[in-house]
Length: 428
Ligand SMILES: *Cc1c(COP(=O)(O)O)cnc(C)c1O
Image (cartoon, rainbow, N blue to C red; front, side):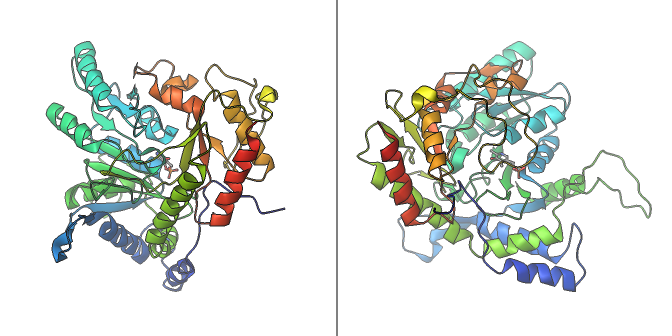
């Protein structure tokens, strides 16, 4: 039997242990230190480089001057960005509905309300027209504009950041880019997370690079970086004793995790290139398979890192075993999800992927391939049933027909061929 092919699993360069050893040797086993500073510098070098195509001159490469703060998680980065944008109890924040819960949960930590915005069909990300409609309607209903806008690079795909920034600027609302899944994705040559006031990155174990767990916030300037670092280290004042004039958090990255991050930065370009290569191979091999469509860059401005490769299934496509889809209650975690999972009380919910999608997931699972439904839109999550939502049906439609396929650095060309053969075999 072949080894299980996972959706996306961390891959080490070998250099991580050198940086960690250095931290132990120098006794920097704390949430600050040379690896944290070094990792932030590496990230700044990476995000600040703009790739201008089509010209063969030395000034092809332009540079930004963004600053980066390393934190304990991407979720912490979202939380601190919201605080820095002044979000507090009773405020509203506009957030893409088609996302992982970490984009919106921190809004609720602050006693604020997420207002969900649906997606447009090409990028699957925040629909700019709907965004503007939502802003106007919130102003009409509440008398004031929402405090921030959070577009999300779902599976790495860039959002229409030019239009989103134009609208946000017109209404004077700061943008927090959730590029947790989109590290190294670019829009017009510029790295995601560098357009808005803040940009969120994640280094969880399944993301483009990992620090085991961790995240970062891209900031506009050194002052903003300083404010974020202050909040991330319990908001201390410079007295000889602990003096607190604001509420802070313990969100700084440890020097050990940052050591892993420095090792990972030596192979980040290879990882991104590999994800794109795997995507290309899926596209090529699935091109003539009727009823299955790969999600691809909607145009030349978009340069996704293809963190996960995703496909949609025609609702008419028949998959082996689909008559048995959702017949049994699942009691454990599907895939590699970590942590305690509540046992489900029902086999179905009122919003779930189509039977053929679930049947394909089960078929691939039996072939030792991890596949997963797309993320269920937040406006359809029971926990957010009372949150305002501006909906056009797009995210719910894709949720019902979409599937995530393995894409990580461990996935070989041979694996992709095996996955595609298995998909073909699953089709009735
Ligand atoms: C992973 C993820 C996050 C949060 O990152 P963590 O490091 O896991 O806390 C935020 N937003 C999105 C869209 C993500 O996929």
